[in-house]
Length: 134
Ligand code: DGP
Image (cartoon, rainbow, N blue to C red; front, side):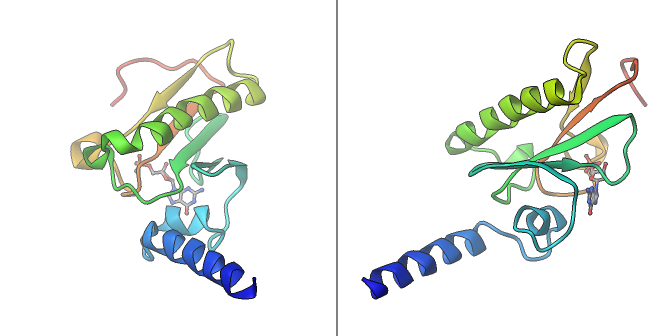
């Protein structure tokens, strides 16, 4: 009994560590090793406030597992990619911006303006935005 529980804990820990990049700030936030204002966490995704908000609401929604960017997504990631959207929708409602509107952005690599190489969805709202932006 004790051995099987220990094996279960060991397997959970190794799965988490394998899914994590130890140098990635968003992995650290998802695993509680770095602080952030968390708004949501479940088995697949974590959402927290952006440290440099560009609008009254600026939330990041990330997969818990380290995926470097959209360039690395696979069909196996489809459940987590769908969850990013349902959590974004839920948080937009919670923030009171669902009706007024908001923008979802996923930056990829240098030309896309990606600075943190752990896939993330920006959910930005609370003010009128123009498209395209610089
Ligand atoms: P991007 O340019 O798409 O890679 O956006 C990265 C965003 O991540 C940027 O808006 C700032 C935010 N960010 C970077 N480091 C941290 C951090 O340590 N905590 C939080 N909450 N946000 C961060």
